[in-house]
Amino acid sequence: MTALRQSPHWQQLTSLAHSLEGQHMRDWFATDPQRTERLSASACGIHLDYSKNRVTDEVLSALYDLAREQGVEAKRDAMFSGDIINHTEQRAVLHTALRNFSGKPVMVDGQDVMPEVLATQDKIRDFTHSIHQGKRLGYTGKPLTHIVAVGIGGSFLGPKIMSEALKPYWVDGVNVHYVANVDGCHIHDVLAGLDHEQTLVVMSSKSFSTQETLQNTLTAKEWFLSAGGSQQDIAKHFIAISSNISAATEFGMAEDNIFPMWDWVGGRYSLWSAIGLPIALTIGYDNYRALLEGAFEMDNHFCSAPLEQNLPVIMAMLGVWYVNFQHAQSHVLLPYYHYLRGFPAYVQQLDMESNGKRIAGSAETVDYATGPVIWGSEGTNGQHSFHQLIHQGQVLIPADFMLPLNVPNQNDTHHAMLASNCFGQTQALMQGKTYDECYADLDGKGLDEDTRHSLAMHKTMPGNKPSNTLLFNQLDPKTLGSLVALYEHKVFVQGAIWGVNSFDQWGVELGKVLGNAVLAKLTDSDAPLDFDASTNHLINAFRNANQ
Image 1 (cartoon, one colour):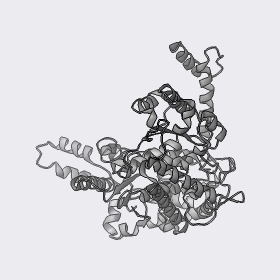
Image 2 (cartoon, one colour):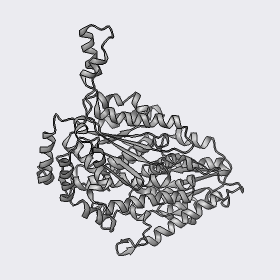
Image 3 (cartoon, rainbow, N blue to C red):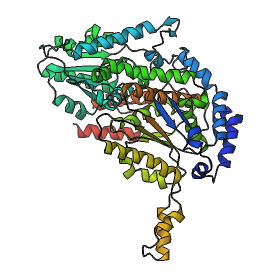
Image 4 (tube, rainbow, N blue to C red):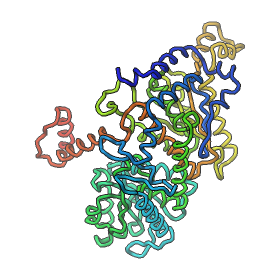
């Protein structure tokens, strides 16, 4: 048994989980009128109601004690101080420095990184203004009105989903298109509708060699050249966010149009870096800066608020409670706002790539779960499909509901209906509907006793299903920045509890290596096959189909 599972507070939580079996949240609400007031917290424009969770004050106290026992506060301070906490790659973890507006230095290996960070922000601002003001033109003198942002993973998901979420703030006259999938259908469909004379390609790859991103950029280059552009014109239509300056300039990009990346920023946290340039091009630099400022405010809250009032800590420890003591295997995110529909996919990468690990410390195999499957969809669509499993299925699925209280230019009736569904679902999940209530509803329906009993059984919903509700006045750039940072820090806290390195991704790296090895065999039909029998069989099938 690992040290974590032997710890006193882990043992206490295990005992508490057993003691709560058979208790129901609806009874807690009936006997405790102050429950919601006590189990709510607000910060950075976000209000969290976590009263509809299967926790008592004693459980919460034990969870916070576990957080202290596992050194969450010290680990948090080490991250913000620039200590090497990504120990498998010997790197600091400082995406927070990219939104640091405190004026204080941030040291990495004895060097203050803030001057370069601020210089890069200025470069993003100037480049964005030059596009929006029509000062940066294509090779024929036309303005650049179409931006094709090419990336993969965090360099794609972050910019794309944040841009979608902030659609009310889009700048007129500029259209940003995102491409990640190496499936040629995607890049082909995007480029087919564009004028190459007015298109700017933004390639995001730290190494300038990421397989999918490089191939899509090469395809865009072939398209540009075949449409009439020349190699010399590449410099006006292609830019890179990369640390491999030589590869980018060899491609044809101007060195002034290459934006830096740093080893201490992981891909899933990179939207705060120059990877976020497409966001600025979509919503304007001032709104992009507000996004960063919102994250900075959440950073300050995370660093200063007591654990019991700390939004990331509260959500993280509730998640630990469900994963490790209630046997939950997934967690659903339910944004009741159409433009935030991509947020579950963003958190999916953030959470599962960070904490989907089996080794704690330096080399200890864990004997406990280190994270749930993250999934979700926008409300109210899910209510007509997968909510059925949440309500009446035999698996426990904690849920996060999200709703802006105001939506600019939204029909009041539409938004009131949306809010009613959001609140009604959290109520139904918590309260359920008893057999007696369902049986009474069928009175006078002309049913015989057996049919009435059977139908009442089918209609019964046990309730006691946990959920958080996150409310914010409206989803402006600053609030979105705070929301993203909230989930970043939630994931960090859980990684600190479980003792895993939340900032490497060796499983992802293995997939890249094997993919490249297989690609070499697919493109050379004479190459000998030396993989396992199944992989060799699949490669042969592909070769035969493409002779």
